[in-house]
Image (cartoon, rainbow, N blue to C red):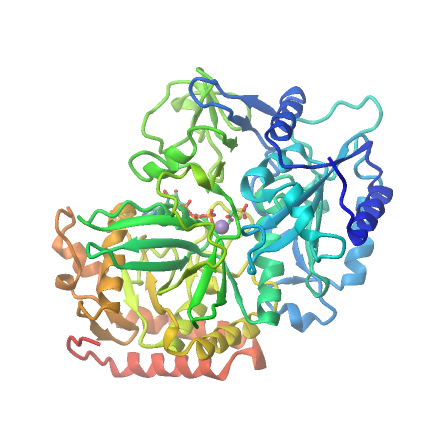
Length: 605
Ligand code: GTP
Ligand code: SPV
Ligand code: MN
């Protein structure tokens, strides 16, 4: 394709070519033919299996190396001049030192491979909220996935023009090929050579050694969250790990909801919700990332910077998420799923069982194998446009006005089904102290319970204390147009280990309560931790849940909450002088409320 006339870009590509010494350089045009070509290359190399065309048209299965199956938080770095700017939640290295180490790794690392230049837009091309990135990679798998997850092609280069700005994203699988050397099915570097690096002061991403997900598809976590979080702070907007959905009540009123849950805690599922309440409708705008700016009317406008879903496969089924199942019917890439005997894909928790297949490690598999057939972080990559409930306005360059923010996580105990914050500051406290039990999305996380503020712990690329202050500042700017803030927990379990809440479609019951609260139509009870619905305030028709379980789900255990206070205090203190005074004030208030055990009767506020 026609090369760019952007001098900076041409110079950068030339510099990387000279450093990495690829066999060839290829500029991506984002076309269908190019997509097919990438998958053909992968198939010929033995990395991809084409699925049965009649069962799953235009779709492929990849198996990754067993050492390269998820994001690697221990190998993810934020390089800033001052360590304090990265803060205590990030792995920091001096930028000069990191560049020296990585230049050593990049030196001739693309030998025997093609260097692909991928021009992409995060967000609709031309929207004032969108950003342009250029990823250089030596992985055809990355090119094909980027085609789905971002907007790739010539139009991006046109928009970039001769002197436009872009975010350079350099990626290599870190596995050079000597002449005659046979390639691995999934080339990558050993763990100690993997680096996912962010030079936030110069909006630069360098990733080396991994071909998987957020480590390699650099538009996603690296650009749209880590680099963007820093840009957003600088420029006064927000880049968040949030799904975006539109909920329409029976009267036709639209509510736009943005929800932040940690990885593998239910964003994709909630984003594609089918409400179980008659007359309510939901539409999906995004399932993982929201970019939000205050619009000319003073409302907070959100866009989904991505154009596809990179979703957790296991557990996805027609029973749990029919819209995801419809989205992945064709034109999709599957990674680390089971290959069935009739050349389709399968994973644990799908609607049907299988008797035999090839597991994610490429071995014969039967239900008796004693191991899971699909990796717990197996994923599908599918175009967002294929979602049956994609919102007609999902690509609106103006974005949608957010009414409600939701935070949450996976808590088998303590945290109620749904809680409303008393006000913005209290909502920021809820977000800042959010916690979750770990999942397979990052296997190097060992803690039983970890504080994951705003679900951004692995993604906020600057001092978390400054990030909290940014939330307060945004609230001040938004004033009475600030979204209302809620906290949810779909994951409460009984002592016997059974889910107390059916989740999925029935999560719409908690959302309905929020929307009704906004309209002043629903009651709540004040508790020390926020406003919680009484059982009668929730719509519970046609729900097969024990009355006692509902009570448990909505109860606030003062002792258990009080027990967590010292650990929260220690966590907030980790950020020293960076912890905003307003956040500390919220902690004190929560502590006082718990001590006083106030329990004001129902109030309509
Ligand atoms: P990332 O893509 O990693 O950011 O994850 P995500 O937040 O989009 O999570 P996703 O929706 O893919 O859900 C992850 C897992 O949680 C899947 O196994 C789901 O089946 C499960 N899950 C989602 N919603 C619910 C729910 O309401 N209840 C229960 N029990 N499980 C749920
Ligand atoms: C997550 O871990 O939050 C994901 C998957 O969405 S990845 O893109 O690999 O980061
Ligand atoms: Mn995610």
